[in-house]
Amino acid sequence: MSIAVDVQYAADAPGLPSEADFTHWIETVLTDRKVEGEVCIRIVEADESQALNAEYRGKDKPTNVLSFPFEVPPGVPVTLLGDLVICADVVTQEADEQAKASLHHWAHMVMHGTLHLLGFDHINDDEAEEMEALERALLARLDIDDPYRTTD
Image (cartoon, rainbow, N blue to C red; front, side, top):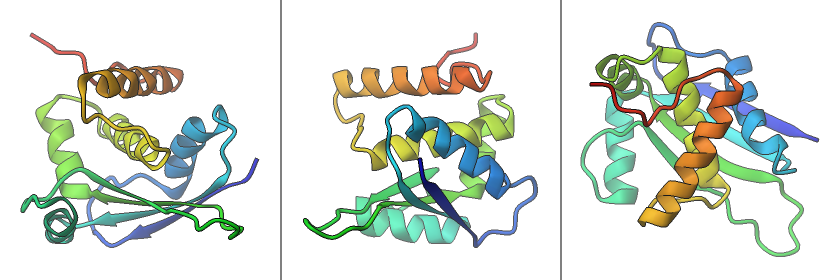
């Protein structure tokens, strides 16, 4: 099984995950699915996230993770799965607001984005339930609590 992860750090924030962390999280998603390929992860500041989110999703605000699947033309032997753009500021802020361990939230965002690269989505309720169940199961393997649980 061949999985390559290229990480670009375009944000200077404390406590960013290592390349080994990112690779481990992506391998956790891809290995069971017998998927090989390359994923590029770009860690960005809020302004870059906001510009991309506005251009590609029509939402003029930074967001936690954007997924850009690569559509391989027929007959072209390329194993690029796509790109993830993750906003360090947003992920850190969400982890704080949701009282989650920062690295646990990073793992969730990477796995969530990787599932998008594989074609999973959460546009309707059925898709959302399937994707969230996969995320819960994958994160549980890493001893990370259910990211969708509510605390009262």
